[in-house]
Each structure stands twice: as C-alpha cells, then as structure tokens.
Image (cartoon, rainbow, N blue to C red; front, side, top):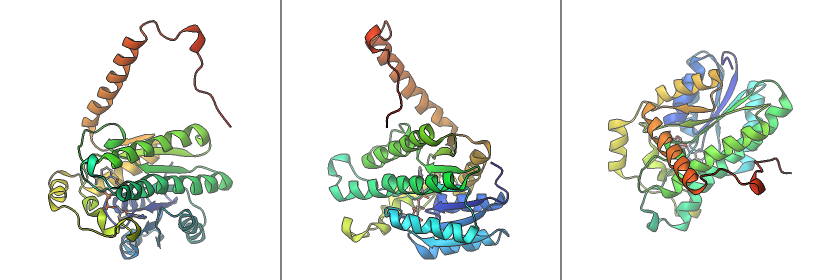
Amino acid sequence: MDLSGKNAVVTGAGGGIGRGIALALADAGANVVAADIEETKAKATAEEVAERRVKSGFFRVDVRNSEEVGRLADYAWETLGRVDVLCNNAGVVAPGPALSVSDADFRWQLEVNVVGVFNGMREFTRRFIEQGGDAHIVNTGSHHSIGAPTAGVAPYVACKHAVLGLADAFRTEYGDKVKFSVLCPGIINTGIWDAGRNRPAEFGGAYEGDERNQKALTAFGMRPERVGRLVANGIQNEDFFIWTHPQDIELIEKRYNECRETLESQWPDGPDEEHKMTPHDVT
Ligand SMILES: NC(=O)c1ccc[n+]([C@@H]2O[C@H](COP(=O)([O-])OP(=O)(O)OC[C@H]3O[C@@H](n4cnc5c(N)ncnc54)[C@H](O)[C@@H]3O)[C@@H](O)[C@H]2O)c1
C-alpha cells in the first residue's frame, strides 16, 4: 500500500515505538490518529504528526476495553473520513522470575498485550471489510514472538507468541480482504521498563520501573524512529513479518531446526495412512 494520503490509527502512540510509527507514517504522507492511555502524550505525538503537514488527531484509549476501542474507531472515521491502517502497538511488561509472577501481573499483561490487540483487530477488521478497498493491520509482537531467550519475562513471552498467533489466524480468515503483519522488534530504546506507570488499581496500581533494565535499553536499543520507518516499509511492501534486527535469523533457524529434528526422529517414515488429514476450516 502506498501510504501517501492514507489514514492510520496507532495505539500506544504516546511514546516509544508507537510514536516512531506515527511519525514515520506521517513522513510517508499518511494522516494519523495517535491513541494512548496517556492522553497528554498522545496529544504531543499528534502535534508532531501535524508538523509534517498531514491531518492528525489524538484519542485516550485503554485498549483492554473493547467499547473504548470501538469509540476510538468512531473517532478515527469521523476525523479522517476513512481508515486504511491500524497499528496495534500498545503493550506492557512486568518483569520478574516466572515463579514470582502474581496472578494480577499475569492478567494485566494478558489484557493489554493480547486482549487489547484482539480488540483492535476485531473492531478494525470488521470496519475495513464493510468499508471495502485496501487495508492493513500491523500488530506489534516482539523477538519474543519467535523465541528470544530472555529470562524474567514469562507472561510477556506468552503474550507475544499470542500476538503472532492472532496475526496468523486473522490472515488465514480475512487475508483476502485485509493485509496483516507482525512487527518483531529486538531491543528498542523506549520507556517499556517503566510500563508499571500504567498498571491499573485493579491489578495493584502504578509502580516504578527498574532503572537497570531501562539503562540497558538506553545503551543498546535501536531508535524508535527507525523502527517506525521499517514499519512504513513493511506496509508498503505488504510483508507479513517486519524485523528490526537481522541477527534474529538465528532464533528462527534454532526453532525451525529443533522442530525439524524432533519431528524427523519421532516420525522417520512420515505420516501414516490413517492420519494424513491436514488443517481444515471449521465453523
Ligand atoms: N522496547 C522494546 O525493546 C520492545 C521490543 C519488542 C517489542 N516491544 C513492544 O513495542 C510496543 C510498544 O512498546 P514501547 O517499547 O514503545 O514501550 P512504551 O512504554 O514506550 O510505549 C508503550 C505505550 O503504550 C501505552 N499503553 C500502555 N498501556 C496501555 C493501554 N492499556 N491502552 C493504551 N495504551 C497503553 C503507554 O502509555 C505507552 O505510550 C509494545 O507492544 C512492546 O511490547 C518493545
């Protein structure tokens, strides 16, 4: 899709990767609605978007809530006339050893990172199909969607596999009408380790992030503006996977090799006659 003159919505656009995506889409000529749970930050991104001489808007949304996501869509269609791109990017992480993860932190991460992404996909895919014409949804996954070996983020890893799974499932079901992508960032210099600032009261309330984790991102992380440009390219090229770190090829090969080796050792003669069925559609 050529982004010039197109209309996009980006969640988690108040900072980090979401802001980088919003600015890159605007640089490519797209009008952008910046949505975030932190309204003042969404507004600041919308102002930067407007400086690029495209239309902009901002909206306060908690992606966990499907009705709020519906209102975000209403706002975007009212503000921009039509919508062509959704970047489902809002996400949080609560680090800690797997055996110490509380029920609340597991549920908070699932709600934002998985239910939030699903809410965006369901609402916008429905509307894209009704609207007709080209449309594209990019989910922000992670190198954790494909097996990056980082200890201390078990629920987050599960969520990011789910984000890839949702993109894959929607592609299977609606890929003839809407394009889907999954962005798999490596380490990016953002405020993600301070995600606890947005933990709702029902999950224990806000807390301060660990400075050591943040320092590593600042030292080694890619600039989010660059990630934004990679996303704009990915949309233009209609790529399903969007990568930020070429070294992730090692993760892909490791997983592929492990699957292949175990499968071949367990099934040296291939499928038997009785079990030749392949995946099929269900209703
Ligand atoms: N930074 C990295 O190294 C990295 C790597 C891989 C993937 N990611 C993913 O990138 C995405 C963006 O994160 P980031 O690194 O830019 O962090 P960030 O904290 O800078 O940005 C996340 C944004 O999401 C918003 N947000 C949080 N909860 C929300 C909610 N319930 N509803 C709406 N908005 C909400 C925050 O206010 C914030 O502006 C996330 O999905 C994250 O998991 C980040």
